[in-house]
Amino acid sequence: MAESRRLTDDEQGTWRAFLWTSRLLNGGLDRQLKRGSGMPHTYYMTLVMLSETPNRSMTMSELAQLLRSSLSRLSRAVNRLEECGWVRRDTRRGAWQAGAEVVGSSSASLAAQAAAA
Image (spheres, rainbow, N blue to C red):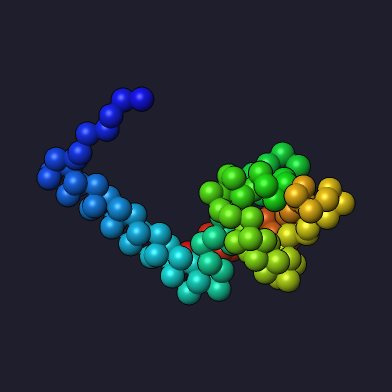
């Protein structure tokens, strides 16, 4: 394995600026979505990922991997989306293969959330 080199001062400054800007952007998107629709960015992205699959569903493991999320964090988000009537959990697959599916009204909700943001 090749040994990694240290970043120069300029590279270090650029890297930190990128990280800070990414944090600010994600925080701003989250606040704007919450203010406009009451939905955090994480929930919105969960609905988007599900709605863009051909059958509008996928396993929780696949969804967690796609969203770069832990299963426990995703499970809390899906529980909340299920309470809102936007997704339906399919538990017939077993604990590790439980799936989530977008409910019909969610497409209209997604459009409204995007417009509100």
